[in-house]
Length: 522
Ligand code: BG6
Image 1 (cartoon, helix red, strand yellow):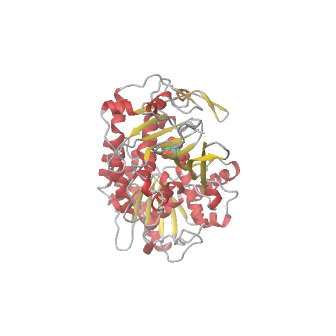
Image 2 (cartoon, protein in one colour):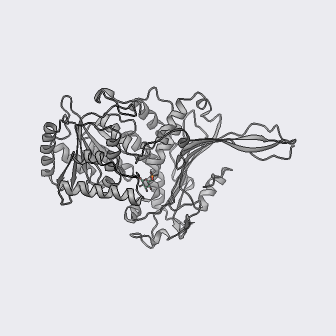
Image 3 (cartoon, protein in one colour):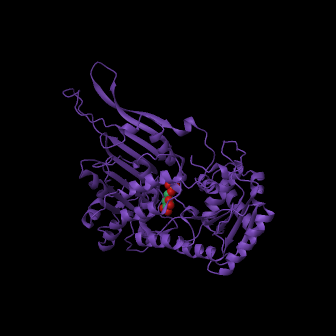
């Protein structure tokens, strides 16, 4: 992002113009886990290939698994190789650059231990001390918590008790915390309170990987770097907004997690609210981390609180039944591994939200997300008001030609504008046409897991793309009435949508009530 603390970085620039990150060590808790293998290490490798990591970089794996540093590095190398040969991971490349991988593995070490054991933190501290000398890391450390969320507070307290989070002159200590940050408002508040006993807010980097997506960052560029759109970006001109994160994948091997999480907790107060706040926030006065995060927090705080009856009326839940997705037969959710035969966990959610501020009063924001749907499609669709009167009344076409602006987040990243044009010919016939910008036709993009920007930003001390406590709590606050209402009222008729469909009928009814309809999934 643009609010980088450049003074912290090496002055030498990399090929893409960004400065090399400053000397530092990164200690990953959960080093033997899925997240480390699939995302964090591949992202570090991509950063190494791009020349963005400093020579004085050191990577310390911390995990309960009994293995040597060499075993750890070899296992990671095998996973990377599998992604290359078999695909199917977030990391994709046609080969592994041997030099870059060697460069990274030469900087790796491993500490085995239990994060509930205070001795682990002392050993880690001694090791980091040694790396500060031998590896010249300057004593700067990122502690990356790629662990189950129930251990977040424990790990932060352990680091604090061994004095590892203390920042002395010229050296920094930062902690990256993964999702999920809490399971409801009370637990998110409790977790914030707990970690803030040890850390200052500026040391905490709460991760939401949607913010690592280029297209999500581009929403700000589109809105604030162009004179064209911002004057139209309000209730005077916008009828409503639809935010969709549709997935074709089911819950796969994550049944256990999903049973206690569900689609609302998994996607809405975090990922969907990132898309929502980027779309609806006021212009920040600068791209500084706090200026941007102030505006994002404000708009989430301005979501109109739902009363209990509204929570039931304005939120729709669904669970997938058996069906066919992309030509493949899919089991019903209740037949997935680790899922109860009478599960009431939702795999789909649609919500209608309103914002109580001058810009958006009266403009509904409809959000929907779900698993095992017809297509993978994440987008923000802005529907403009109809032209106020029809010049073409009385002609044989009185069809509606709404103006839509669609920001495609993934796949086929781009922006499209739909508007009416006259079909050539002797009579006046209108047709909806599209102006379409696709990223891939304009830019060469480097291979990315989406984590590169976030890890690099943490290294240079730019928190713009990380979640602040107030935004997280405001997000939970907004969805809490729905969580409460759903706890109190069991869902009717689950499963209620077929795998491979557009979602449950109730979601269509939510918009139909307002005289609107969802854009079909393509
Ligand atoms: C994760 C959720 O945070 O985000 C998953 O836990 C979801 O359930 C995923 O599938 C979506 O992310 P992406 O980047 O694949 O759109």
